[in-house]
Image (cartoon, rainbow, N blue to C red; front, side):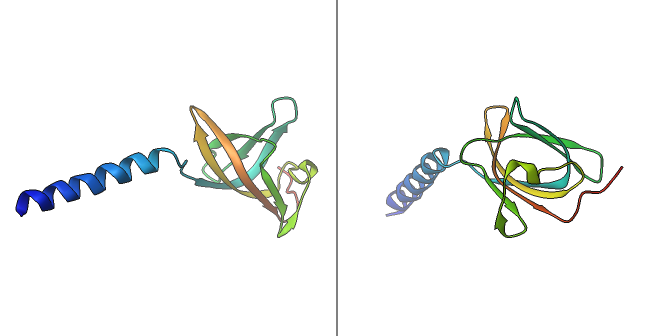
Length: 106
């Protein structure tokens, strides 16, 4: 009976590990828009601690200005932005970007 219970637990753990591999994990990052490069479709976000994150936009990236759907122009330098992304190798692929507030000057 004890062996059967151990085998069942091992099977559940192994199945969970394989199921998690197919679903990318979303992460979040917040800061201010530092730059948007239209050629590479790369958004650079700077946090308060001066660390920067670079995110690649795709056709499926959701852009919001507040709660309304937005265009690329909303990603103007100095605006606060909250992003959700997934890793694709070494690239951070942007799933969602929500900008808010007016652009601030440096």
